[in-house]
Image (cartoon, rainbow, N blue to C red):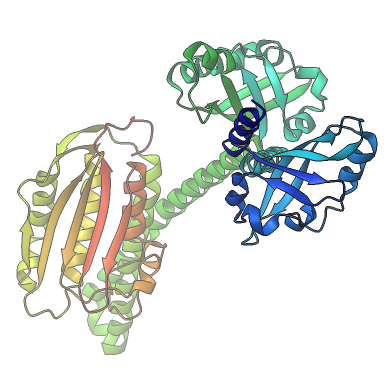
Length: 495
């Protein structure tokens, strides 16, 4: 029976999931079960050696001495070095082994590897600290709410912005803290409901926030839900649902934007008035120059005639410049009705108007017959196509067979149009500059141009909610591309 008991005990020790060993009062191994092999050792090679052999240098055996002297059970963590040199974090539980006289003859130890849980715990602590520092340092105000809209925490920015302490708001309901007009009219309560229902974030822009103790502020607000990495039971998930409220104060930005818009409006009005007032004297200069040439040509002589020709030419150029400036100012001032029109009809009308110029240069024009119906200010989009097609004709240069292609692509929410030519092309370093006012490429001899046409085109396209750019290399032609949204834009002055 004693042998059976011993064999049974031996079997339990050998099949245990933990590494189990015994040491004598000198700390030398007297038994190691097979789990020592998990650490790269064999029981035979360690038998009779000090248990400190497999621990790192930070361990000095003081706990072992305490267990021997005080006959105490202990549980503590150690760093165990595997045979390959890897450090494992283990939890050790020791019990004294005593003889019949109660004298301690050694220790029984159970060792459990807790490296992964400890690493995960350390990583979690690090991430928590990391996240707390990020939340504390972000310039936006941040509030954490539970699903009942009770405030669980706020960050430093919110406290400093409001001049409050945590206890002033934490634990209160958002309805006690935010004014009614932000919650209701501003749409914040509705945003909370939608986020809880859909788990998708919601953003509110330029929400006006007024209170008795603070001047009016303009805020951008984003509400999002905090999800756990692992899905729990539905009831539990609802109980633990968390909302994150991020608030950006854009009051100063909105004020500057409004001021800039006002200045731009004043500048547009100034350009319009000056250009309009300059047009009359320019017309008079042209008229009187023509009269002098017609009625006093013989008295002027060749030199006087040449001077008047120069006056007329420069006056004509000034008239074109003033007309372009007026057109530029009207882009933001005069709003045409948006309606569904055929872009193919617009292109055909442009080509018909400049037909003589194209025939003079022998320009071949290829127009896609499936150009779409677009929702736009028809007069403005006519200006866009006219400018791009006229430029294409103008800058095909000395190409043996000048050719222009007008096509489009369906890009989902947008139509992308392009006007392509096989002309002189544009170096990549000028691709943005050509959209700057009065900018003209020195290498292009363009006596007619004012450097305003593409500025007008870009403004029209942007007012329609699109973008414009050029794809070109010097000597390889140019392709001007622009997009127009399919969805009808609001007729709110964007023409």
